[in-house]
Image (cartoon, rainbow, N blue to C red):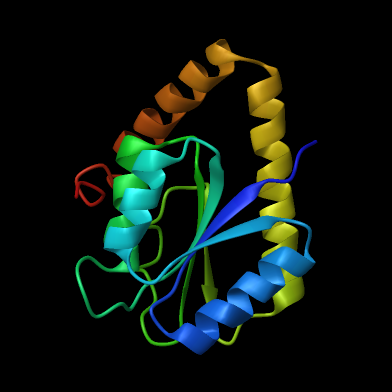
Amino acid sequence: MSRSIVLVVEDEPLLRMAAIDMVGSAGFEAVEAANATQAVEILQSRADIRIVFTDIDMPRGIDGLRLAALIWDCWPPIHVIITSGHTKPPQGSLPSDMVFFSKPYRETEVIATMTRMAVQTAKMLDHGAGKIIGTLVHHVADSLSNGSFLLFLP
């Protein structure tokens, strides 16, 4: 399996550097964005991003929850890990394949989650386009069944 690429979205430079170090030391390739606008630009230009690790609270543009919603709508095969030291998403508001960690988080737990997501993505890609279409259908059905479809519109 090739190295999965993780997009780290964090507005605080020191926290972003720490997250990039964590991602790299776990064997993933890290790409960085200082805000959601930069993250969207990167996602639009790169088809190889497999996981997004984003903070919720970012001062400019959209926050991490809105970014996660946009990823859900535009790039459903990408897995999202959301983190915050201040804001916690309401119970049941995230789709089943998005994960939230409160800051300070345990790096071992975040890395284990990234590894699980990378393995899931590799399996999905091994099964080809049919599996990807099935995953897209699953995302829409999951959104409709838990009432989060409207919540996740950008």
